[in-house]
Length: 386
Image (cartoon, rainbow, N blue to C red; front, side, top):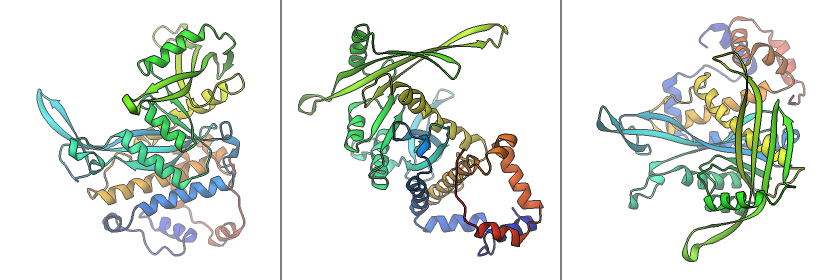
């Protein structure tokens, strides 16, 4: 980025740019401005795309699938800011304190594979219940994130995709209050009363079954609707109707050790806010719930493929958050570009990282024609996805 030609090419696209700021300058800026405005600009970008129906083809039952998951961002042996969380570990048989930053992320997880960062909620020690010596946790952060998401997109039809941490009454109540649908991973050890009902009723409901081949895998779905789930205790006891679906699948693979063809199997289970039937089980499970993996793949990209998700950049809490928001915004812009019809062929040919390297080298080494670039920038264009 310090090459003279890079700066010359950049000013063709951004004539108002005078220089590239030094890291210390950017750090001082982020330390004093309202970094939440960066997140607001990010949300506005997504809101405009939704209003223009850019993602209409990739919805699930006319809902926008939003995956929510947490990830550790940083860990240190010393406390750098009062907002960092704390845990106790053992090292060489001695107890040691660790301080870490944990983040809850919401991504738009579309059925075509696009995973677009949407909203970030930082876990903050000061948000915990200090009177009872309880620090902030992912469940508390979910409540805050859900409130922000509803405020930013009050009328958006949402299908929330959650992992095995979330199948509980209070979380489902939040979704109901926001008029969101949900698909939540149901682990074997979760909600034993619901599992008992499912096992007892599935043998009596033979019509609640669908077999198909999808993605090279043989799938068998079984579901039971209208299971009564109770949570809470005493006067706060509540009841809710839930629906459970289990997918058992098998496929042929080559054993890494022997080179022989073998049959592999897997099993998945979800809680659904909406009753299952033959016409919607594929959409809700395969095109919706299973695409929750996209947010985890996004974490992998941000941590290992050049976005430096786990890098601190600043020990100032506000500046560190600002860097994180900028990183997530950059990832969003890259995903939108990579899936656009204008670039998708080049991305598939070179790969994502290869295309970014090609773009970087083009800007750093090639002399672009300023008049030609300006004509293209002034011409009307429309963002279309493949």
